[in-house]
Length: 393
Image (tube, rainbow, N blue to C red):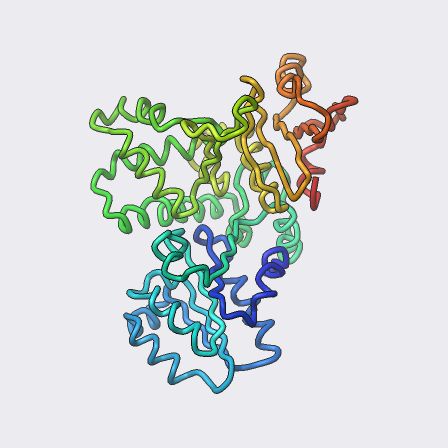
C-alpha cells in the first residue's frame, strides 16, 4: 500500500500531544492503513504501543465497555508515554469516557471512525477542544497511479471518472470483480449500516432517497425538491424526513452538501445546496446499460481533488449564472468552471459566460476533458488529465 504522506504529514506534529487524534472518513477509504503507517513511524522509537481494532470480533467480544478497556490498557502498557491506537472505536459503549480519561495519563491517543458522530457537538463540548480531527478520503488520481504502479497495473482517467478511488477495488483484476466489490461496499456502508445504526423503519423510502441522491450528484437541491420527487412513490414523505435521511448520509461521509454563495448578498443561500458523493462509484453502480454520467462525475471528481489539494470549495452564484466552484486557500481565490467538453459552440458560450462581470483579481479557470487548449486572455483552460496531476492550481 502507498504511503499517504499528504495525510500523515498533517498528523505528525501531534504525535507527542495529549490532544486526541481523530482520524475519520467514509468506510474503506484507508483510515486503518494510515493508522498502521503512523504506528510504524512511532514504532521506530518505542515499542510502548497498543493497537485495538473494534471491528475485530476477538476485540469487541472481550472489550465491551469503558471499564474493560481501561483494564486492558493498564495491564498491557509499559512505563512512560504509551501510544494508543483504537480503530473504529465508536462501536464501543462509553468510548467518549475512555478518550477523556486515557489522554490524562501519559498516553498519546489515536482513534479512527467512519461516523461523524465522533465529532458531534456533544462529544466536542465534553472534550472542550482537547482533540484534533483529520478527514481521510478515497484515493485521488495521483494516489491511484502510485498504487497501481505498485500493483503493476495501469488505470485511465475514464476508469477513475466511472469507478472512483476506493483503494481495495484496484486489487481485483476484472471489471466484474471490481463491480461486485463496489456493490457489496455500497450495500454495507450506504444501506445496511445506516438502516441498522439509525433503526430506520421506512426502509423502502430510505432506499428510494439514497438511490435518487447518489444518482444525482453535482446538482443543486432543496429538501422540498427532493421531497417532491420521492413523494411520487411515497406519499407519506415529509421534508423533515428528507432532512433527517440526508443528515444520516452526511454523518457517514457518503455525501457532502455544499452551500451556494450569492454575489449580491456575499453570504450563503441556506435554502438550497449542491450535493457531492464521497466517491463517484456511488453514481456509476446505479447506472443502467453502462450509460455512465461522466459529466456530473467529472465535476464531482474535481470537487474531491480540490479538497485533497487543500482548497475550500463553494458553489458560486454569479447573478443567476452558476460557477461550479469558488476555491480558496489562504489569500488565493479561484473561480473554477467544470465541463466535459466545450468543443461545441453552444457549450463554449454557456460555460465561459458564467464568468461574465467577474473581475480579474481572482483567476478564472475552466477544466474540461478536451485535448485542445481553449484558454482566453482572461480564462485559463486546464485539461482534466493535467489537472489530475497538479499539486495546486
